[in-house]
Image (cartoon, rainbow, N blue to C red):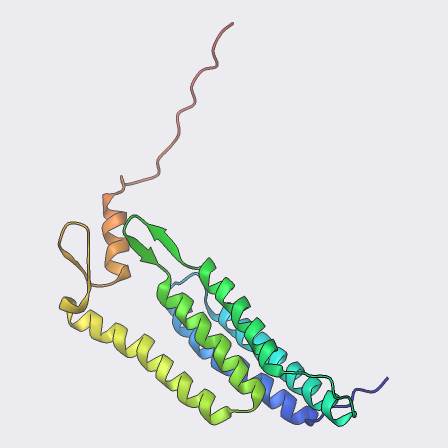
Length: 190
C-alpha cells in the first residue's frame, strides 16, 4: 500500500528536520545549564509536535479532496498537542516552600512544542523568529542577571540569590564534608 501525501517527502523531511533543529538548540541551552529537561527532551517534543501537525494537515487535506464533507479541523489536533506539552511542562516544575523550581524549563518546553507545530505547518520564518527570541531570553537574560545581581531573586533571609547556581553552592556548603555513612544498629534480642 503506497502512502499518498499532499506534501512531498522532501518537504515533510525538511519540516521534521527544522523542528528537530529548533528543539535541539533550545535543549542545548537547558542541557548546558544542567536542567532536568535538556537536549533530547526538547528535540523529541519539537519533533513530535511537528509530526502531529503534519499528520493533522495531511488528514485535513485528504478528507477535503476525497469528496468527504465531514467536518475536520487540524486546530483540534494542535489543541490536543498543546495539552500534552502542558502536561510534560508541569512535570518539570517543583515547589519547595515558597519557591518554585523549573518554571523556565517548563516555559522552554512549551516553546519547543510551539516550534514543532510551526515547523510542521511549514512556517519556517515564524519558527526562526520565535527560536531567536527564545534563545535571546534564555541566554541574554541569564547573562544580565549574572552581571546585575539586583535583578536576582530574594531568598528567605531577605538576601539576594543571583541565580540557581549560587543557591546550589550554598546548599552544598551547608552539607557536612565527606561521605555520610549510615551506622547499622544491632538487631533487638528476643
